[in-house]
Length: 334
Ligand SMILES: Nc1ncnc2c1ncn2[C@@H]1O[C@H](COP(=O)(O)OP(=O)(O)OP(=O)(O)O)[C@@H](O)[C@H]1O
Ligand SMILES: [Mg+2]
Image 1: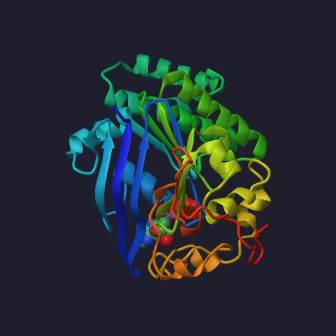
Image 2: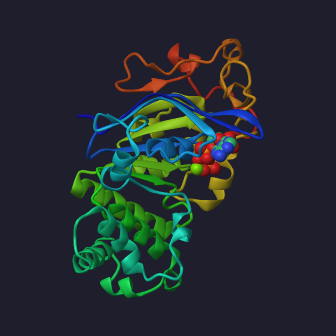
């Protein structure tokens, strides 16, 4: 059975800016033991999607569609079941989570806590598991006695991964889990996550701005723009041969894995993504697109399978009619 199946997911925030449609009509699937990358610039809806999977969105958000975790719909399950699923079924490593460790509690008990709460084991057993988990993420078990401030950023991020693994989840969602780390540490932590995923047959959803990081670590990639998936395909092929102009720009943005400077200016791509509360007519990427044709201002292209390109989908009229997606460079697209 498919581990995670998302069907026609829509999320709208209601707040001071009126209705903000942050995720629009997203369909995605992930099999056990596989990895799915989600790429896109800031504000494209990546974290909203991640939070929807574990029903962690604020009350101001309305959600529609289906999120099936091993066949069970997360959006309609009762609270008791949801609590159980949040630990044993799926767990999430949040964006910037390494800053959310409790500063005045030792590391070991913080890792042992979910094990104690959700499994019927003694404190000694939970502590032993915590020590094993630390070793699994490459930290000496003696760190269990230490406090978060005694660890480096990379070590704290490893502790977060240990916590995510504590109750042996089937699915891990890692939201920019390595973005704040320097390049060397980022590579180590990524290797660690993907190694654990392969070893344990866990499903991984990995969210990043950085398409090159995702192409090196994931099986498949979904590129999001303005709340929609605009391209979907096998990771390496998508990175090497984008079939949506936005993916092409995002791909050329990160010539070096984890390069911090290019992270701030994706590909020198001119302009910003649209405000989801006030989208442009037609294709959301149209106003920034180097390959846009007249049709692009008229209607929003659907995400369609491209003939002859196995498993590849693109929401681009130009790609769908067999054209080149890079077009004439407009603005500063490299
Ligand atoms: N609680 C909220 N209320 C209203 N709007 C929100 C809320 N949270 C997020 N948004 C809006 O929803 C859109 C998507 O935000 P989201 O955090 O999902 O983006 P993201 O792709 O994770 O970006 P980043 O790369 O910066 O983390 C943005 O336009 C954001 O302003
Ligand atoms: Mg985010």
